[in-house]
Image (cartoon, rainbow, N blue to C red; front, side, top):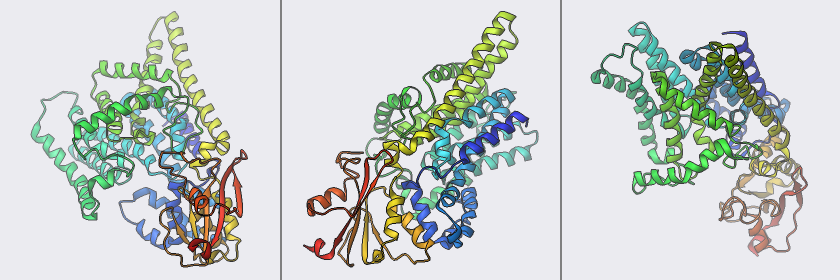
Length: 531
């Protein structure tokens, strides 16, 4: 490993780690944070299993800090909460380098890893606690081990590498839903990874290999069935239409038709990645610039023309991951296609490396033109990536859509509530996707107070059992009735309160950094609720 590669790895870690607490704890992070604050010992026990693997090992770093919560500020809490994602993101940069070097050499590996190092799309996911960041990492591990198995000089070494590949395949399935696409990609890749001697395909050996892989993967699906949820419940979110309901092929074709244009637009051409849940302030396509689309086409054509087994593996991973991700869901979201990042960037790195290599072997005039063009493309992409992620973190704290999705204002609301002496006399009703309950737990725990609050999400309220209710409602000025969807995802409890108590005034107003109201806090009595 050379100095340039080491510099890239250090840079990747610094970018993902620096000022990690800048954005508030979001809705998805809040679930883990709440469990960690309320039941640290139970979480620690559940982290010991192989299913959770490295992420849980890293989160063990939190438990000592939680026990000494008085010296544990919110910035440190957010930092430790997101540390596993930082490690996963940085490790993926390292693994892309190793995988690309295994296939195409050092130059292609350096270019590929550098492109990922400063790619805003990947950086954003590396700086929040989200499981999807582990999908590209495990993809790199799976195929790095598979290629090492192919290149092994002894059967024992080859078997060990192959079993490691199967192990990582099994672990990937436990991290995020889209990792299920690795199963068909893995099986098809085995067909291409034959020895360079191109011996005749042996169907019996292929079945043995599939059987070995099945030993690792099948127990996972058995666990799903035993849990009672079933395959569909595990792999499909409630807001996606289940493709197994009705005609499977018709559903897949319909999803491909609806998502194909949108996904390509979001990847290469959109001035803003609207499919980003926690990256709304990114004013650029997911893959940086429309020029990358042309380079990607060139990389695809080049890979097909080389007719190399490793090229076909990358093509299967790229196309299988892309088509599977958009064909399996009814609503396109960028996190489902994060699976294609490693093959896309490795193929781009190889293509740009080939341009530079071709220039090196050309005559003087052609060499100058090609070297200049290749260097210009690489530097241009890198500079755009750097400017984009710099601007993103510069403007994200003030971007309205970013603030909405990151539950901005929840910390201030929780700090206010924690200072109310009668807080435990009231039921706390918080709006959709608010993270107030996490921050309130922190403040109360930090003051040595046992939290006795009863929290309810919209629609979960029941018979009044306390003195009254405290409602935390998203402000209508920033969350109109039709915000997010036609059902008014964020409308409750503000519109409910205005209908039931039209004269009720908020006891506290919290604004976004741009001055627009973010949320209101209301307080009602039992008489108000029953009246």
